[in-house]
Length: 186
Image (cartoon, rainbow, N blue to C red; front, side, top):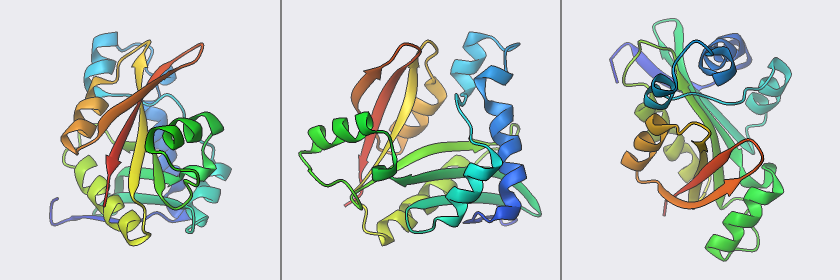
């Protein structure tokens, strides 16, 4: 991390910058880019509106959103929450895989990491700071989902595998195939 960069908790004043970064990476907004480009450099498939971001940022008990700031500019973010706030199918899969009945406060579901284009060395510092914070909160595992089909998010897969995530399951619905990646913290 550069000396003029810092990772900090997101505040409501950061929401517009987060929305801009997210919108620029959404696959639906990148229709002119080739499949190869999307797979090589990564993409997001869903974003939240301003109200949802306010809810996430203000729920410090169950959620965590960090931003990377370079001078006065937000250049990246990472966000996630306790798995008990995720959809039931994901909870059931993780519960079954780990043999745990109550997942609350054991599994942190990390939803998104994103950065402005043309900025490097953003993801890893954000991720490491997130791990530090969720470890303090006594989480044992962190899990994320990465799109495998119709496009394979190769950039995200490579990033997460370097950080020690392992593919533990694949889910399918009518539009997407998602890899579920897990990392043990303790």
